[in-house]
Length: 238
Length: 119
Image (cartoon, rainbow over all chains, first blue to last red; front, top):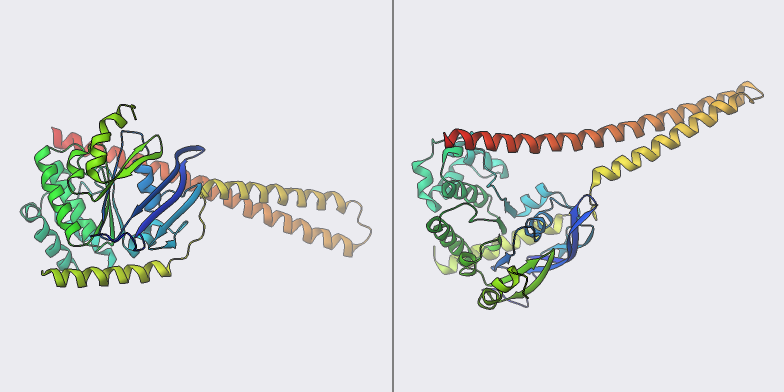
């Protein structure tokens, strides 16, 4: 799926970043190859969401480089990165709770895609959304809200998709269903960077995984190897 | 969709992405840009005030109207710098405040929706 000799689609080199004067990331190196699913795992407060913030241009690093397809993009605004094809689904889903499903989908036509196309793609991917099209998004179940967030993101035809805590607050069966969708997107060639606290589901679809602790990537490797070391890392035994 | 079509679609999307990224110009970026605008604004304000004050003091010793006029121009320049600096300080402070306000609204809105759904 991913060719190690190819240029990484997303690369973070020696990233130091944080909030105000406090550094959260202390030299993060990460590379996502074309067509790869990269799982970034770690406990709460490890710096995973901040890493996504840096990769999507929302947080400017104090040091280090963000490269997209080999081009340095430090300082490029998040909206320009989004238009180029970098798409982030934030923790908490980022939908409009007081708008209906259909209205939420209409909001993603900003990228120049027609409403009809957006709806077709969304309903083909997640048929349940069609049944709920007139329902207020805030009243959907957590899984359906996540589906809506994903369909909005996919309607922009991203080149790289970043998912922050996809499984948060969802029932295991829904998580499984969502990760099936992630797997099918990966099979279609989309590069995906997933940040998760609970690793089991994501390791099943990832090609590469990393453990992050205290703002540093402690270990990178195939998901099977990472799965073995995960408990020890979370308990501070590694 | 067939694998061949998928592969063709992927490579064309990647090619498009390559072109889009090529158009992006890295500015280097700075962490906390508002804070930098605030600091630069503060420096400009101080320089402008100093310029104005020095010009004002020197007018007392001006021997003729031409020198006096030069110092008036310097004072106006100083006042302009002060004004620009103050605008920069106001804009950066306002942006920080509005960002905080927006985040607060988003969280309150979300909590309200959760309460409505929960009841």
